[in-house]
Image (cartoon, rainbow over all chains, first blue to last red):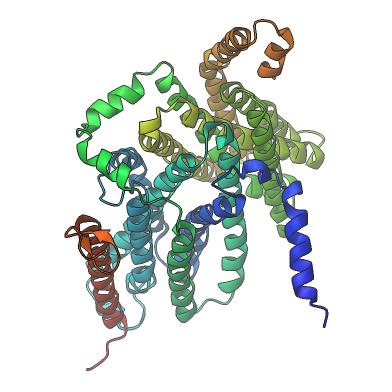
Length: 483
Length: 51
């Protein structure tokens, strides 16, 4: 009998790669399938982020009746670990293993912590909320165990992401790194979007049993996906192991000095911080702004998030293409931050005139800018990092990025709530609090552009020089390199 | 194979390599053990069994 399933699968397999922006990643020893498999660790990171920031935020306040201030404090705990990413990256760079492994041990440890945190989290939350007999239990049991579970998940998530990205960049040659960066970002976005939909559906009818199932299911899925992602990725090598044994131990302070002393290293980190802060603040505010200032329905605000994600995907796609063709990441980061300024201006103006169409254009623009900026700054970080310090450089990137994004999201919400509280008495228009936050974002992005400007200009000079040096007889080459 | 004194039969790993693999197993078991203990205590606090 004709096997339709096999036929369809084979057709899709032959059809797929040519419409895929990352297909030509398949260099000799690392095929696309292997990189796709590795990128699953980003899906687990996305799942954890959505569960913490989105789902549990709501469940703890609405269903479990935990005070909002306590919830905010608990959810901020994973953020405490973000600066430690630098240390994790450094340790994985300097790891000594008889197997020649540098990355796998840390991803495995991170996975264990993530699993452990999720495994005790539902019970900790139930005890915290005084479920059944726990109402008589001393308060500190619930508080400390919930804090511990959030800390474990946060620690694990930061470890897995930092070291996982380092492993991915170890696997491919430098000219292919933009494509890997794009792939990793897309998988994070996909993981967050899909899991947000699934969590929303699963927890629609909340019961304590369902909460336990969902969180522990996440724990099992995290271990399964990370193991699958990690399988046979990092080569076991006795030569590397022998080299690790004789390499003198480097102190963290020395490694950090070496990293930060390179030209423009600090400048790049400041730009990453400001840009991520600017774009991060908008994430949670676009939906309520659409609803309150422009009167969007619930379904329409959901589509708004889809539009933002579409813009971000376009940004990733364009950045991957442009950077592989030889575009400069520093200049692209500049463009990414620049797009956000008219984007947010359009969003602010939409409250006064034109309305929805202008708002949608602004949303798409900010999504695009965030995508370009995220991709380009990560690629630039990888380009600038010395080969033996990839983990440390990614740790620094992640520490700045995660801290600033977290502060941005928290601050955006806090400022809005504060001004909403004020304007309720004064009778200010409903878009006022949002416009205040959007203005802060414009200021942050403008600062990022100003500080990033020398990076972009220097990159242009560098490229001109390189093009001329390499091809003295071919003037066309110069213009190709610059684009 | 088995005449190399440094290699552990039957995997062909050296002693140091085998010990490292073993250390991951031991660490994992410890972490899982502590997590399981904690989870049981928390469940017992909210819905006690055996009394």
